[in-house]
Length: 107
Length: 156
Image 1: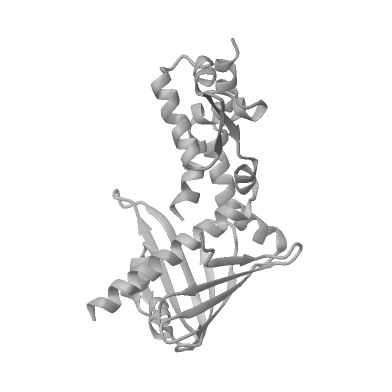
Image 2: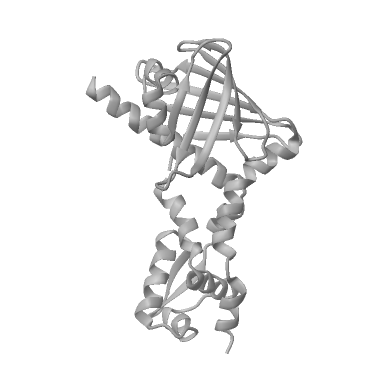
């Protein structure tokens, strides 16, 4: 559940959206991605890490270099308009379950 | 990742079916809908009143810290059968979605597990679709906020 919400938070950031736009064109190394921005490599590296954790980026080792690819499957999840609606109810019901478990233990 | 909550919404129809399995005995699941204290906790809203009987009703309200009403909803209860069923209307104030009719069915799956099936019927297909797309539209607003600016920044 956490993970799926994070996907939306991940793409809420403008720099991260820009990274996705870049990588969508072709796979890139972290260095090549960072070269496209004014921000420090460290900052860009942190953004890449967030995207990779949400599985929006896939890492592929090619010799000594790491290349980042766009995970199209994950992007499709975001494009599915029903998914946020389902997440909303899922969160709500998770809350209900948590509240009632606590209530049960207090009895 | 297990998908406990399922949404069924057929194209061109004006209802939504939401089902969810809970790790809770049936009795506790039903109480989560029946007792004001508990409703308030999981819905995250203030329960102004609940009168659980045919021709009874309920009202919810959420205020921000300055006292402005952020969310208000109310409805009438048509059927209230403990551990089985609630039939009620639901209307969110100032939301433009109209009055919805809700059928909530509760069933035991085992000693410690239960299931809720909730059918919501809207006045029109368009209203149903608008409600379902709302969370998506909010997500998109975050996502596409200033995309053009960023692309401009990128191109050198």
